Image (cartoon, rainbow, N blue to C red):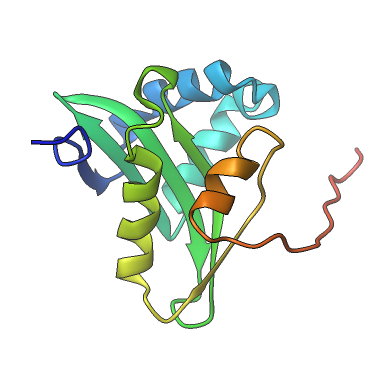
Length: 134
């Protein structure tokens, strides 16, 4: 059995959030960590929310939004550092695209994740972002 085959993809449950919050910390996504309650609500309200589990432990997660027909937007994709380069991210992406096969996948990538998406045949796409100022 390969490492990827030993990974189960299942729907997100509220008890997964502490591990997801730790993954956010590990990745340095301080905004999501500081807004922990809002981030947890986002997970609960997302149309796509799955986790990758190996040996009973959450080792990755993917959260997204979709209309089910045209666009599937991936908001976050995280894999625990100890489990990277084992196909977990690829399995998460394939799982959600299989659930919504008619959609195109849109996402943001960091400079460190760009190579992952390029190896999966994603192409760069220009976009914008604005955070509301309060």
